[in-house]
Length: 166
Image (cartoon, rainbow, N blue to C red; front, side, top):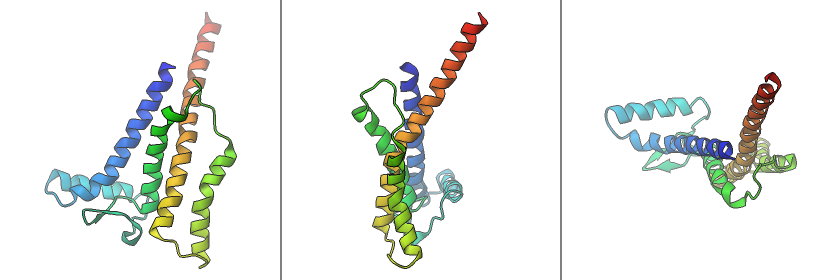
């Protein structure tokens, strides 16, 4: 149980740091020296995972965030999902949610992108944000359950190997 709390805390802190970096890039760009260099690094770093189109991004203090609206919503939704785990989790071991829930969470993004590609729907900032947020919120449970299962399996394997050895 203690290990699960540690894994949860590390994942939560890493996600908080990731989300902070998304917000720090536009705030630091107007600075000089180290902060401006940090901002440029963050934009470059996040440019590896997101297109960063200005018209598809939220803005803070007149500057676009380090990732687009959909990506921002996925990451911040993921963070909110992790924050909600202690509220909704009642069992000591967190099982994997049913897979159909993951497919249902992906569906709004697939529809938003797919319908826009075929000119059947104009993908707007709010549809990108909403579809990304739903996905981020839901996928956080899957990722956390996966981490917990992986570490539980590792510790079970270690305990089994130790018991078999002695």
